[in-house]
Each structure stands twice: as C-alpha cells, then as structure tokens.
Length: 112
Image (cartoon, rainbow, N blue to C red; front, side, top):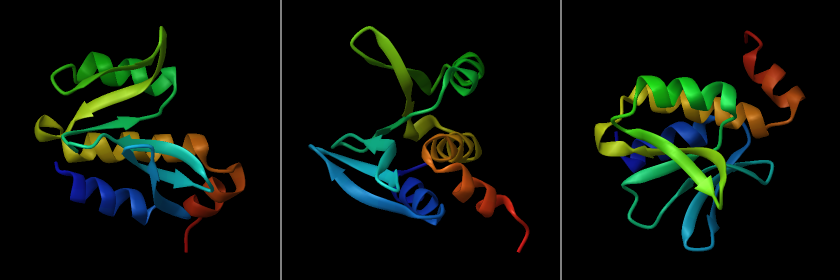
C-alpha cells in the first residue's frame, strides 16, 4: 500500500478533508484528526481505540505497532510497504467512525 491509496480511501469517507498538521499531513472529519502522515510518508498514524488497537497489534505485528504520546498509547503506526490494503482501510474507517459525529456515521451506513 502507498500514501496515494491511503489518501484516496480517506478522502472517500464522508466529510473528510486533508489538512496540514505541523509538518505532517492529517485527514480529518469535521475538524477532528483520525489519521496523520509523517513527512516521509512511509507510514501512517491511525487513531483507533483499544478495542481495535489490540487485535490489530496481535494479528499484524509485521507492519503495525503502538503509537504513543508520552507514556500513553494513542493509536497505531502502520508501515505502508508491508501492509495489507484491506486491513489499512478497515482501520482507517474505524478511526473515522471514532471521530465522526454519530449522525454522520449512521447516515453513511444507510443503504442508498
């Protein structure tokens, strides 16, 4: 997987924008960050809760590791070159759901 695939998927989620975040790129839903991309764009930081984080770490340790802020675990660091696209997309989607307003998530899952 590469950063262009990440960008395309993230921006396909409702009300997502791409904005700078210091020297990183961020993907946001209504101003709330759910993914950041460091300058080299070889990995992404995905902000998911424990319920998604721990299983992903257990199943995919070859390309997923804990992302910490000080001593607190805040998400996942995913190395893109080794990552399975379906897993990355699923985690990005869960991160989006965690930051999007409930109504937006509900509307996004309704059949059209």
